[in-house]
Length: 194
Image 1 (tube, rainbow, N blue to C red):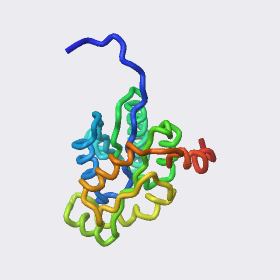
Image 2 (image 1 turned 45 degrees about the vertical axis):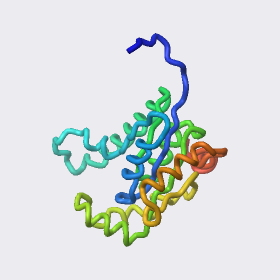
Image 3 (image 1 turned 90 degrees about the vertical axis):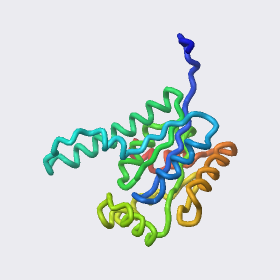
């Protein structure tokens, strides 16, 4: 393998899958990695939570630890993209500060924001089938996750398979025009707090 002293600078594309727990984000991400023409990294927030040691966290410190984990995750994604890597982000924007943090860190022209959703009854069924999430978690996240309302693309995983959703996203990548959802959001909610 050839050693490179200089790698040409570029910015990576961020495919940002936002949806509740059990909405189908990871399944779509897996298909995207299989079909996209360039290398992409799948960076799910769950992987960052899984990296934390199993040392018990006192209840009064848990919110702080989780907040720092999310902040670190956002910065890791932004760093990968800034280094020229393409990234598929698997995220849950269930708190407004998370979106604002991402808006302040990511290059908005490089982000494709995808709404991943399905019928609430289907979310509940998937949650029960998984058995690894607290009952009602997805339902509790529903109101805030999509509250910002602006997306580049939408995938209803109750109506389309992960493969179909991934192909829609791939097709969209080749036909993108601005302003992106992140550009629009930065011009409205992002500017108020950035």
